[in-house]
Image (cartoon, rainbow, N blue to C red; front, side, top):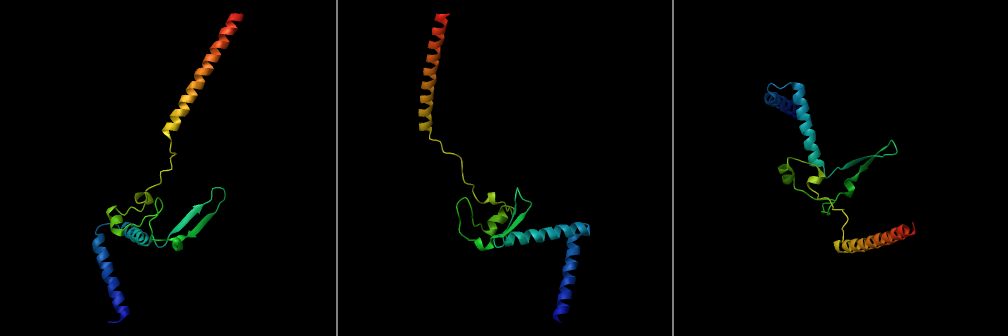
Length: 145
């Protein structure tokens, strides 16, 4: 059997299996499902190797394409990059969201509670002094009227 004949027989067998698996599902719906599944698998297998970033400028009507594959390193970088085994992704229902694997950095302001408490005490003292000064001024105004 020639390679062309083998390829034709393989295609016939694949078509037969696809029809069998499809069952009573409409051909178009089945095609959409299979193509979507194949695309999703391709994306998930090539995600780390071929990274393409789309960036839409807010002030300009332009889209910038960046091939970041040369920047890819397998090192873990805190709050930025994490190498995840394929099995872990599979266990996570093939979730490709970065936030599912890379912990976001806590950028909240760290507040020194001791310093804040000291500032509050100083402010309360100033308020009390101002209130006392206002009371003195009011008493002087009342005495002169």
